[in-house]
Amino acid sequence: LGSSERPKRKQVIQLLSALCVYNKEKGYRRVLETLDNFKTNQGTRYRLAFIVEELRDCSIQTSDAFLSEYSATLLALVNCLLVSAPSLTERVAIRNQLLGLRLYDVLELIKLRREAGHFTNDMTVQLEAFEAQRYTDEGHINGPDGIDLNSHLE
Figure 1 (cartoon, one colour):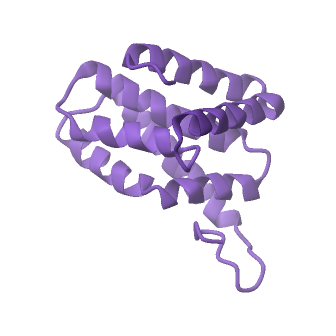
Figure 2: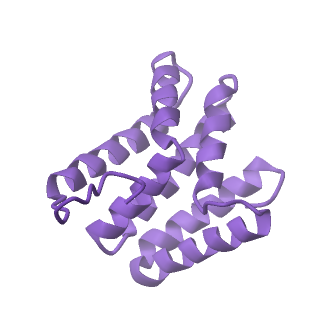
């Protein structure tokens, strides 16, 4: 993940996604541990910040085929984390961490750029999967009194 070369980072992200999906219990935990270790090594505060920052950078730059694929790979990792989370509470916690990092703002920018033809169909698939899972989870949220499970502060 720390490589200055995006093609190498893309390969690592693809491996993390595969680990998450194909070994849901242990793989999911290993991926979170990897992101935590990367966060510590980079001196950043949040384990998912790397993903959101990379998506933000890709969404701002000009239309480049590799960046479009790379962005879809990043969002695929987010989707894999959400799908592999063992409980609704963990999915909500992951989603709220992303909310706190302003992923939703980045996704809105990506949607606008996608409409202008700057992203591939892979990104469309990942955006739709992200939204579908979010709507499904929101339909199942029954938080305790006074706790908003959709708040990144809770």
